[in-house]
Length: 344
Image 1 (cartoon, rainbow, N blue to C red):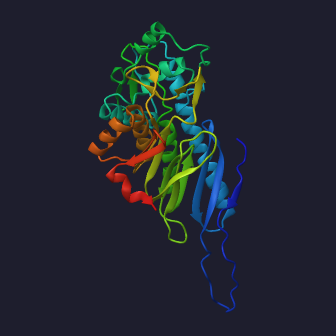
Image 2 (image 1 turned 180 degrees about the vertical axis):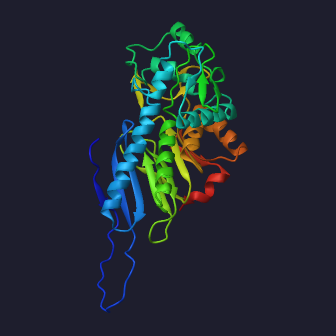
């Protein structure tokens, strides 16, 4: 693992003590840690005193946490816990899983049930078929027969779990799990929990656009985050939100896609059809109290589209912000639960 650069994002004022016997607590600063992870990058801001030794320890601890998540949930590593589950020869046998893996499986099932299958981690075989997983991208669009064969291997209800001890089984079905729509959010939460245990009272953790926050900045202000305009060429701000002790995740079709004959194929697959989503919704951002749930819910709403997704989010009191393609450019709408987080 390469060493990470550490630098202060906010420079503390220097002062001298004129009176003997007087002492002052060091000013707290915002320090930033960053590096590559999960095929993207992480940026973490922590509020603490000028203590480079502690920062170095935090950096090492964060990397250890993220390496653990990657070793458990990556589909790109043959030796990951997830890959070993997917490659298990005897599919009728219970597979022992770690606490972290089990937590993600349980939350995945909850969101699948809630969304009536709009979120489904068993969609992996179809994701791979369309070239968004470890398999190579197809030279032609998959035909109906091959798609039907892969879809026969999909179904979140075919995956069973039990705890004490934690185990999972595919019920003798050839299931292939893909946690890419929830593992990144879980990684954010895992880092946040690590920082909590280290006594860090204020921080912002961001991995590939998914964010968790705790406390406030040294000046007492809340963390301000941008919702991006869903364009692939540049990074442009659509709206600013203010968060404290909350997480936000975004799902969109504007970063990971390919085009054939002028038609865009999104990396987000609709589990009901096995095909990339094709509606006008460009991105949806969700705010919840943890990033794993926000990540999964944002994917589910993205699959549903702007109308069905909005109705679902309002019904379930989900704070969601939708950006969709209108006749004259991008249009937006957000649920009542989201409105209090928006800044003018």
